[in-house]
Length: 104
Length: 434
Image (cartoon, rainbow over all chains, first blue to last red; front, side, top):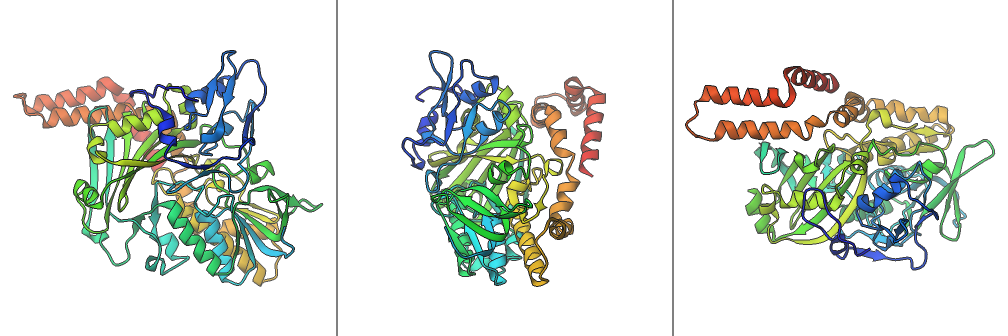
């Protein structure tokens, strides 16, 4: 998840530096979003590597999309974008876990 | 989970859920409210502006102890190109009134306060509890919920779904369709802290006065969307949002877009030296009236963002959420007093009552706007550039006579959008607006 991502019309931005400010209660070993095993990701899933506001998605050496959802801000964009492809198993974190907004 | 049977279960402790739970509890109904966050507000995101009118109708004396940031005395509307903005500002001392009309708020604090009122009114609140599914009887009517607290269940005569834009419970139960990428916006926001004197000096404020800036133009890189800057007491909320399907087709990242907005020469001096303490993202339902789902059924009602109650043109949402929550609750109280069943037929009264309020009237008035803006990108990329160019031509004193300048401006518009295009856009906008 330590990838530098080019932002539109701006200098490279590291999303990790932003997420660092946030509070999380990580449900260790129980990610609330899982990617179903795939050979080739759909265009929609691939778009999430750029579109996810928390930078949770990345492409591995074999061209598959992987997710590390510890920094997820629970917006649901990936769920909506991949609703038609069925590539994600998406649930909210268990009660009390996940992101905790200080200000919201 | 809980043996007792409730009159109503409210899913979610945001503005719509709190308004519903408060209104019912105050009228003596036994209310159970379920919230997945550690505390109410811990999962909730908004700009945020509080519209006093909607809350006054629920808690008339809210100003006595609600955590309010600044009352808004000035509204700035900016159309921006890469290096400039053309602004329309409205500032009035009339907004320095005894009962101000709009306030900036910080949702995590405000929702906690509102939730305190809900509990004082007698509702039972369970946090850290995610509702996983609706329970139905053999006839299909909703009779309760299952939660992730050991799979525990709770039962009630009605379930009010105030679960937010990305609410899974109603959707997975088939009560409303999946969100579509072209009717929902993704917004990202940062909280930037500065000393209050600095904010007051930079925005020309005194005391608790506040400014709201709404911006559109090249900041969204051709996508349908807007940016905003809101002044809180000791912080500035800055964010930007665009329609999700536009994002999927663009090459932008949401945080890259926000970063570029922050670095815009019109914005950067406002944030200079600030400390960012939080970065959030959230979806906003922007499909309007045409994207609204069925609002009620046997044993259930949907309120707030989950029902697509957002007026994207006026950036109103929390007031629609509170109003739908209140009206849903009042309908339930009314039916209960008459000892009538909370059936689909009887709950049609909820929608009838909403039709009488600004909520449905505004949703209907702007029903054509979302698709107009989504299919006419010139409103977001071309016109802001033309406006800025025109302003510069007009204001720059360079020895060119004014009649020539007028011609140059007119020609720039014709070159950018042809006369038929200009007239067509004016016509489309007027027709969608009325």
